[in-house]
Image (tube, rainbow, N blue to C red; front, side):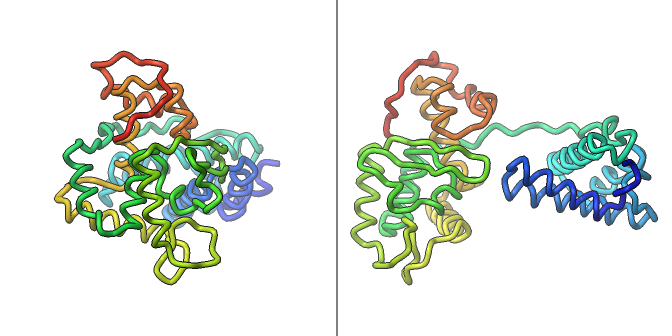
Length: 289
């Protein structure tokens, strides 16, 4: 079979189909596709158009080219992950005999600690968006449940129960349920009183009744970060703050990992540095921030 489908375009198409069958997320498939395309364009400039013609030295040259173009070590490492996965797939399919990506090492880089908002900072954020009922509800929702911004945008009215929030399964994420405390329940009730009348099922909508998109949410919260004087912060840091706060309060890392929707326990364990002063407990009831 080796040599039958060895052009980059055909190999990439086969690889993307494989990722889809593996139920990888849309964002992962897009990222892998772009990374392989970028490698393909680099190699075409060197008259290499067949995946079976690529050597480790060509991939090392690609890595160096990315470095010269001022890509961060973290970005280069991520692209190498895509390429290594691509070539492992090609070898498993018999499209190549040797894996040229296997010997290529990742650049070293320091992983930054998660950005955690202090109590003063998230209170300042609340104050800054207090008069914007919709964004105030979103901020409270993210602070009190730790859901992702994409999950906020996907929420539908039937997902909001009296005391629980249902996160429906999407892409490779399974369904999960999160408790709603008094603070977020009050913020949601205030928003629902002013939510525009519309047929859409989305919880958060624009003034004209259309679903509020991820980019709209991010832009709005970023603006309130600036108004509150909170620097070097991203929307995802609300989620980081929720995780760290509950680990500090003694919530079990296993329980918190399930509530956060982390696929690996190690992802949650990154935040244990913030829980050094308190032993891990088995507490399930989550405190308000």
